[in-house]
Image 1 (cartoon, helix red, strand yellow):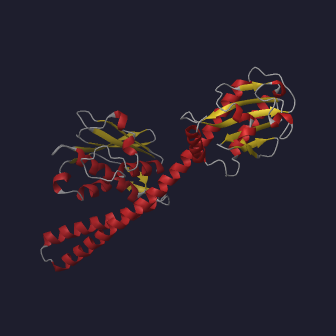
Image 2 (spheres, helix red, strand yellow):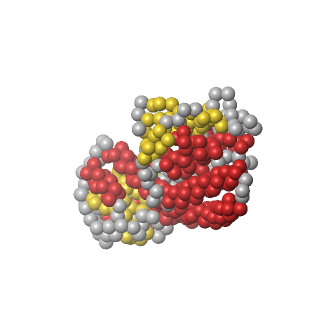
Image 3 (cartoon, helix red, strand yellow):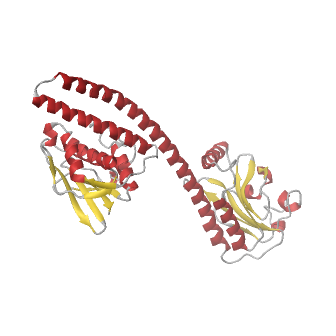
Length: 378
């Protein structure tokens, strides 16, 4: 074992944040299960650092820390197969170990299996033991292998949860900054529009300014709603939402040339949050227009499902390879950097749809391009 191996293991252990935390109930339960499968009174999850053995979950005794040099598990740390020892006092690897000879214990029966991360880093071992010698049961190796793998699964799940929490916190902070950056110029626009309306006598221009003001008001409300949602406090307020009316507003806010591309079929009334579903339709229609060729139609359609509705927005753009379609919904991912955007639109849309109990995806569009679709339950 060299220093670089120890550094890799130390980094993996640090990521799992298991050394200085309170014992996890899930890990304690798996440790107890290992002891019961082996038919012994004691079991332990031993994490091996460069200097120590740390018991992060135990069954049958109190957890402790010892020098790595004294650890039985450190002696066989990188054994891939399950280590099965009926009597450690006559095993050359362990007969002089202080856990066998008396200073730390009087272990006789010992069995263990490596705790190996998905990247192949061994961070410790799951071990079961007794102060009495035992015969080795025919299924013990399989049981310890399975339980050790589940221990790592628990650690991986906790690590993923922590990473998602950090990502959500960063997304919330990012959303707050975006909100600030958008609302300041939006307030200036609204003020300018209001002043202009007071000075204009032309009826056509007045109506145009009124339309601009309504669009600014909708954008202001949407920014506030999405900021709340991104920070985790925006559960949908379910009401009857007319998607046809919502989509008409979205099209109205587009530049005239882009609005002319959009073909809207019959759309349903659904149960949902008005502002959040408006944001979904706005993102999908705007994306479809952005990626479609000039004058190519963007088609908005709906289909009845047995227990809800399917809504699709189709474009005639370059398409998205199937292998990249899941990534398109990840925060801050932009598959085509030649087009403007932040990479949070589709991620926010999927989060909104899933909060409504639905799902979202991307499919091929017959004749070229893609259909970005979502489903909402009744």
